[in-house]
Image (cartoon, rainbow, N blue to C red; front, side, top):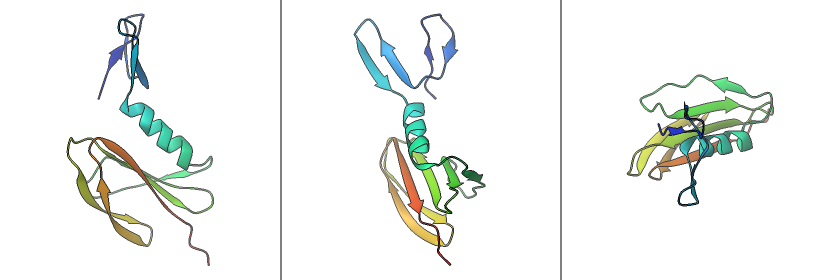
Length: 109
């Protein structure tokens, strides 16, 4: 986890780190996580319990019945993992140091 210090001197997780000396900025992992979740997970969604050997993921069921999984590969190399979302199973190729979002449409009955 990346930590930075605010201008007031207290340690915090931040979405963006700004270096006032070089006038540069960097988007942190928390920024990308919030970006993915706020775009794909709709108001009223419920978090789903997940299991398996891969732990860097969040899953939700949206009010329309669609299932969303946000997966973080925090390694410097790509990874391939098996994902089961509802009745769908697939292999996901995760880029190094990336967030990936997968969506499965609701099953109409």
